[in-house]
Length: 172
Image (cartoon, rainbow, N blue to C red; front, side, top):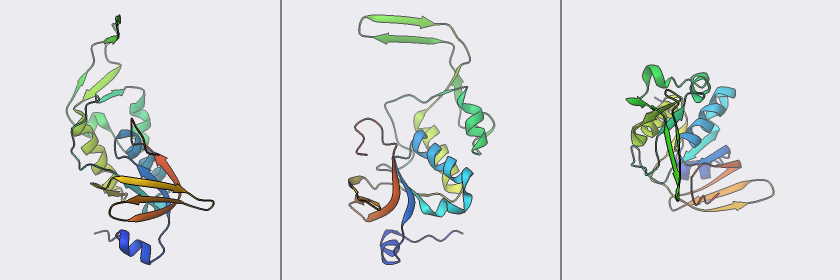
């Protein structure tokens, strides 16, 4: 199997990540998989930090627009062939305050149970060798001249850059 240094060992060894991605939802995992696709030899220098453990319930929906499917396929994720169970949206009913608009455009979006989608994507990233630290909330970020330091309750990490994919109320 793959052996990777933990946070304490990484600090002792002077490990510096190329990128730290905060958030292991679809945006964070897609960013990690994209980096892996571009430079697979650097995937050990990419760290994803997630405050929860997968699968986790999310209030937001699990809609994936059909236009995203070829992009995901390029990154090694084929939601149609191997993804979790899904529905095909029959249209859209958009409401905001007192306004409502209905679009009858069937097939434009696949709808997944968000917890199942996130768990599936997380497993794909781990299978690609991407390090994901779950149940480790980011407590602070310091942007220095030559590095970014990301602090959690468990460790402090250093990277060339940080990617904010931690949703509403992003710390990044």
